[in-house]
Length: 277
Image (cartoon, rainbow, N blue to C red; front, side, top):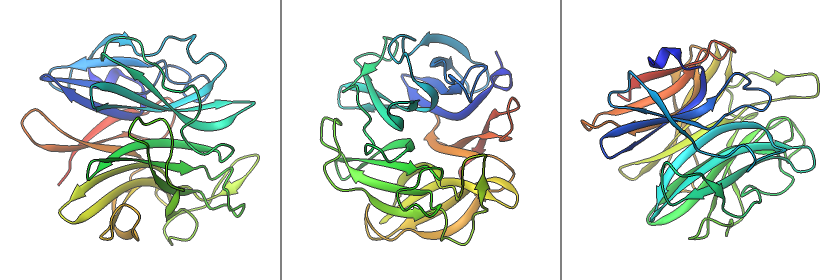
């Protein structure tokens, strides 16, 4: 099937052994049960075929809002990071693990890796100087500051990825950056900072993240020259045409791409690809 046929939010591309693998918030119900954890495979980033379901439906029974799965190879294991919601636990991100890309993933601990009670989503793994870090969003509907400031935080992970070993540090404010437009629903008003993706560029750590501006869903680039926990300053608006939740990857020819979903309107969301430069 052509990539335009796949209804997907939060697309994520994993490259291994000469193949491209695509996952994301797929399925017919992105705001309910959400991701069906289908993994797609492609030789060319154009035509994709489903190859497996990464997580057995019973593994996460009782959880809804299964959003934004990310796939990472770390050590000799594969790790899947997903955003989840359950009435008695609220929203958080959980890490699952497998020894093979095409074997079922199971919870690493069974608990959220994000702080208990915070209301978190969109966690991503970032390896810097040999250490693993978790960057994640404290959702705008349940900000720990209680002032509508949805924000991005980062903390160091234990080597086995089972726990945070440093207190989370706020690196991006949704409310106080001067760019975002207030979001609202029936229960809350606030400012969005979500969908983080980090990479190194010389002595800088670059952060891509998503928010809402006057033009719709938008991707912002910020950077730190003071390490993982440094001050992240605004660089530029990367994409302002109602698309976001992006990540970067190298293709098989060594070219860097950014992928995101666009538009941000269900059920029209599709995977978009842009040269990173």
